[in-house]
Length: 242
Image 1: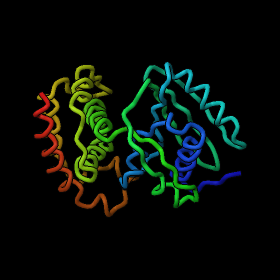
Image 2: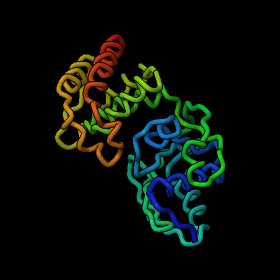
Image 3: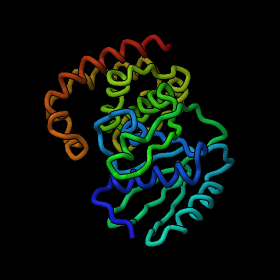
Protein backbone atom coordinates (compact mmCIF):
# COMPACT_ATOMS: atom_id res chain seq x y z
CA UNK A 1 0.00 0.00 0.00
CA UNK A 2 1.16 3.53 -0.75
CA UNK A 3 2.50 5.59 2.15
CA UNK A 4 2.72 9.39 2.08
CA UNK A 5 4.68 11.52 4.52
CA UNK A 6 2.79 14.76 3.85
CA UNK A 7 -0.48 16.12 2.47
CA UNK A 8 1.37 17.51 -0.54
CA UNK A 9 2.74 14.05 -1.32
CA UNK A 10 -0.85 12.78 -1.47
CA UNK A 11 -1.90 15.77 -3.59
CA UNK A 12 0.96 15.04 -5.99
CA UNK A 13 -0.33 11.47 -6.29
CA UNK A 14 -3.90 12.72 -6.93
CA UNK A 15 -2.71 15.06 -9.69
CA UNK A 16 -0.72 12.26 -11.30
CA UNK A 17 -3.68 9.86 -10.99
CA UNK A 18 -6.16 12.35 -12.46
CA UNK A 19 -3.77 13.18 -15.30
CA UNK A 20 -3.52 9.49 -16.17
CA UNK A 21 -7.24 8.77 -15.83
CA UNK A 22 -8.88 11.92 -17.18
CA UNK A 23 -6.28 13.70 -19.31
CA UNK A 24 -7.28 17.13 -20.61
CA UNK A 25 -10.81 16.78 -19.27
CA UNK A 26 -9.48 17.61 -15.78
CA UNK A 27 -8.28 21.22 -15.69
CA UNK A 28 -6.40 22.29 -12.58
CA UNK A 29 -7.14 25.59 -10.91
CA UNK A 30 -6.50 27.19 -7.54
CA UNK A 31 -3.55 26.65 -5.23
CA UNK A 32 -2.13 23.50 -6.83
CA UNK A 33 -2.04 25.10 -10.26
CA UNK A 34 -0.06 27.92 -8.66
CA UNK A 35 2.34 25.38 -7.15
CA UNK A 36 3.07 24.12 -10.67
CA UNK A 37 3.88 27.76 -11.56
CA UNK A 38 6.52 28.07 -8.79
CA UNK A 39 4.32 29.54 -6.05
CA UNK A 40 5.79 28.79 -2.60
CA UNK A 41 2.38 28.59 -0.91
CA UNK A 42 1.33 25.14 0.27
CA UNK A 43 -2.29 24.02 0.10
CA UNK A 44 -4.34 21.17 1.52
CA UNK A 45 -6.69 20.61 -1.42
CA UNK A 46 -6.80 20.40 -5.18
CA UNK A 47 -9.40 22.09 -7.40
CA UNK A 48 -10.54 21.01 -10.85
CA UNK A 49 -12.85 22.06 -13.65
CA UNK A 50 -14.04 18.99 -15.56
CA UNK A 51 -14.94 19.59 -19.21
CA UNK A 52 -17.08 19.10 -21.21
CA UNK A 53 -19.73 18.04 -18.68
CA UNK A 54 -23.40 18.92 -18.28
CA UNK A 55 -23.47 18.43 -14.52
CA UNK A 56 -21.38 17.65 -11.47
CA UNK A 57 -23.31 14.39 -11.12
CA UNK A 58 -21.69 13.06 -14.29
CA UNK A 59 -18.21 13.94 -13.02
CA UNK A 60 -19.05 12.45 -9.62
CA UNK A 61 -19.83 9.07 -11.16
CA UNK A 62 -16.67 9.09 -13.26
CA UNK A 63 -14.33 10.10 -10.43
CA UNK A 64 -15.86 7.77 -7.85
CA UNK A 65 -15.50 4.82 -10.22
CA UNK A 66 -11.81 5.63 -10.72
CA UNK A 67 -11.07 6.12 -7.01
CA UNK A 68 -12.89 2.91 -6.13
CA UNK A 69 -10.33 0.97 -8.15
CA UNK A 70 -7.44 2.05 -5.88
CA UNK A 71 -6.71 -0.51 -3.19
CA UNK A 72 -6.57 0.96 0.30
CA UNK A 73 -8.04 4.33 -0.69
CA UNK A 74 -11.14 5.56 1.13
CA UNK A 75 -13.22 8.57 0.17
CA UNK A 76 -16.42 10.43 1.01
CA UNK A 77 -18.28 12.62 -1.47
CA UNK A 78 -20.66 15.51 -0.97
CA UNK A 79 -22.19 17.86 -3.47
CA UNK A 80 -23.94 21.21 -3.31
CA UNK A 81 -24.64 24.08 -5.68
CA UNK A 82 -21.04 25.27 -5.39
CA UNK A 83 -18.99 22.12 -6.00
CA UNK A 84 -18.47 18.40 -5.70
CA UNK A 85 -16.17 17.73 -2.74
CA UNK A 86 -14.35 14.47 -2.17
CA UNK A 87 -12.37 13.81 1.01
CA UNK A 88 -9.67 11.26 0.25
CA UNK A 89 -7.90 9.16 2.89
CA UNK A 90 -4.94 7.26 1.49
CA UNK A 91 -1.48 6.26 2.61
CA UNK A 92 -1.84 7.84 6.05
CA UNK A 93 -2.85 11.28 4.75
CA UNK A 94 -6.07 13.16 4.02
CA UNK A 95 -6.80 15.67 1.27
CA UNK A 96 -9.78 17.35 -0.34
CA UNK A 97 -10.64 17.35 -4.03
CA UNK A 98 -13.06 20.03 -5.23
CA UNK A 99 -14.62 19.64 -8.66
CA UNK A 100 -16.79 21.88 -10.78
CA UNK A 101 -17.93 21.23 -14.34
CA UNK A 102 -18.40 23.29 -17.47
CA UNK A 103 -18.71 22.91 -21.22
CA UNK A 104 -15.40 24.68 -21.74
CA UNK A 105 -12.66 26.40 -19.77
CA UNK A 106 -9.78 28.54 -21.09
CA UNK A 107 -6.57 26.70 -20.22
CA UNK A 108 -2.88 26.36 -20.96
CA UNK A 109 -0.52 23.35 -20.84
CA UNK A 110 1.74 23.02 -17.81
CA UNK A 111 4.28 20.43 -16.68
CA UNK A 112 3.78 18.72 -13.34
CA UNK A 113 7.54 18.26 -12.92
CA UNK A 114 7.96 20.75 -10.04
CA UNK A 115 5.47 18.79 -7.98
CA UNK A 116 5.85 15.27 -9.35
CA UNK A 117 9.64 14.85 -9.37
CA UNK A 118 10.17 15.19 -5.58
CA UNK A 119 7.63 12.41 -5.00
CA UNK A 120 8.80 9.99 -7.69
CA UNK A 121 6.02 10.56 -10.22
CA UNK A 122 6.64 11.06 -13.93
CA UNK A 123 6.40 14.57 -15.32
CA UNK A 124 3.11 14.95 -17.17
CA UNK A 125 1.63 17.72 -19.27
CA UNK A 126 -1.68 18.79 -17.74
CA UNK A 127 -4.01 21.69 -18.40
CA UNK A 128 -4.38 24.53 -15.90
CA UNK A 129 -6.90 27.34 -16.02
CA UNK A 130 -5.59 30.25 -18.11
CA UNK A 131 -3.78 32.58 -15.67
CA UNK A 132 -5.71 35.72 -16.62
CA UNK A 133 -8.96 33.89 -15.94
CA UNK A 134 -7.65 32.46 -12.67
CA UNK A 135 -6.39 35.89 -11.63
CA UNK A 136 -9.82 37.45 -12.07
CA UNK A 137 -11.51 34.66 -10.13
CA UNK A 138 -8.93 34.92 -7.35
CA UNK A 139 -9.53 38.67 -6.94
CA UNK A 140 -13.27 37.96 -6.82
CA UNK A 141 -12.73 35.20 -4.24
CA UNK A 142 -10.76 37.55 -1.99
CA UNK A 143 -13.51 40.16 -2.34
CA UNK A 144 -16.13 37.68 -1.15
CA UNK A 145 -14.12 35.90 1.59
CA UNK A 146 -11.27 38.27 2.53
CA UNK A 147 -8.96 35.32 3.17
CA UNK A 148 -5.29 36.23 3.33
CA UNK A 149 -4.32 33.21 1.24
CA UNK A 150 -6.47 34.61 -1.59
CA UNK A 151 -4.79 38.00 -1.33
CA UNK A 152 -1.38 36.34 -1.28
CA UNK A 153 -2.27 34.47 -4.48
CA UNK A 154 -3.40 37.76 -6.04
CA UNK A 155 0.02 39.15 -5.14
CA UNK A 156 1.67 36.14 -6.79
CA UNK A 157 -0.29 36.59 -10.02
CA UNK A 158 0.65 40.28 -10.08
CA UNK A 159 4.35 40.02 -9.26
CA UNK A 160 5.65 36.50 -9.89
CA UNK A 161 3.56 35.56 -12.92
CA UNK A 162 3.04 39.06 -14.41
CA UNK A 163 -0.52 38.06 -15.33
CA UNK A 164 -3.35 40.41 -16.29
CA UNK A 165 -6.78 39.66 -14.82
CA UNK A 166 -9.59 39.19 -17.35
CA UNK A 167 -11.72 42.32 -17.02
CA UNK A 168 -14.92 40.69 -18.33
CA UNK A 169 -14.73 37.88 -15.79
CA UNK A 170 -13.98 40.19 -12.87
CA UNK A 171 -16.84 42.52 -13.79
CA UNK A 172 -19.21 39.56 -14.10
CA UNK A 173 -18.16 38.19 -10.72
CA UNK A 174 -18.64 41.58 -9.08
CA UNK A 175 -22.23 41.85 -10.35
CA UNK A 176 -23.16 38.62 -8.58
CA UNK A 177 -20.76 38.87 -5.63
CA UNK A 178 -21.83 37.11 -2.44
CA UNK A 179 -20.72 38.04 1.05
CA UNK A 180 -19.51 35.27 3.36
CA UNK A 181 -19.67 35.48 7.15
CA UNK A 182 -18.81 39.05 8.23
CA UNK A 183 -17.44 40.14 4.85
CA UNK A 184 -19.08 42.90 2.86
CA UNK A 185 -18.34 42.13 -0.79
CA UNK A 186 -17.76 44.97 -3.23
CA UNK A 187 -20.16 44.94 -6.18
CA UNK A 188 -18.48 47.48 -8.44
CA UNK A 189 -14.96 48.32 -9.59
CA UNK A 190 -14.97 51.54 -7.55
CA UNK A 191 -15.92 49.67 -4.38
CA UNK A 192 -13.38 46.93 -5.08
CA UNK A 193 -10.53 49.37 -5.69
CA UNK A 194 -11.30 51.24 -2.48
CA UNK A 195 -11.46 47.97 -0.55
CA UNK A 196 -8.18 46.68 -1.98
CA UNK A 197 -6.34 49.93 -1.29
CA UNK A 198 -7.61 50.08 2.29
CA UNK A 199 -6.50 46.49 2.86
CA UNK A 200 -3.06 47.09 1.33
CA UNK A 201 -2.44 50.24 3.34
CA UNK A 202 -3.29 48.41 6.58
CA UNK A 203 -1.09 45.35 6.04
CA UNK A 204 1.37 44.61 8.82
CA UNK A 205 3.59 41.66 9.65
CA UNK A 206 0.81 40.56 11.99
CA UNK A 207 -1.66 40.25 9.12
CA UNK A 208 -0.41 36.86 7.97
CA UNK A 209 -1.27 34.44 10.77
CA UNK A 210 -3.39 32.43 8.32
CA UNK A 211 -0.33 31.96 6.11
CA UNK A 212 2.07 30.70 8.79
CA UNK A 213 1.33 26.99 8.10
CA UNK A 214 1.41 27.60 4.32
CA UNK A 215 4.66 29.53 3.81
CA UNK A 216 8.17 29.16 5.12
CA UNK A 217 9.66 31.80 7.40
CA UNK A 218 11.84 33.28 4.66
CA UNK A 219 8.78 34.05 2.51
CA UNK A 220 6.85 35.54 5.42
CA UNK A 221 9.65 37.91 6.46
CA UNK A 222 8.90 41.41 5.20
CA UNK A 223 5.84 40.22 3.30
CA UNK A 224 3.71 43.26 4.14
CA UNK A 225 6.32 45.59 2.60
CA UNK A 226 6.38 43.51 -0.59
CA UNK A 227 2.65 43.00 -0.91
CA UNK A 228 1.55 46.56 -0.20
CA UNK A 229 2.93 48.25 -3.36
CA UNK A 230 1.90 45.29 -5.53
CA UNK A 231 -1.73 45.40 -4.38
CA UNK A 232 -1.83 49.19 -4.70
CA UNK A 233 -0.43 48.96 -8.25
CA UNK A 234 -2.98 46.29 -9.15
CA UNK A 235 -5.76 48.48 -7.77
CA UNK A 236 -4.72 51.26 -10.14
CA UNK A 237 -4.80 48.81 -13.07
CA UNK A 238 -8.24 47.39 -12.41
CA UNK A 239 -9.65 50.87 -11.78
CA UNK A 240 -9.50 51.22 -15.58
CA UNK A 241 -11.85 48.23 -16.04
CA UNK A 242 -14.93 50.41 -15.49
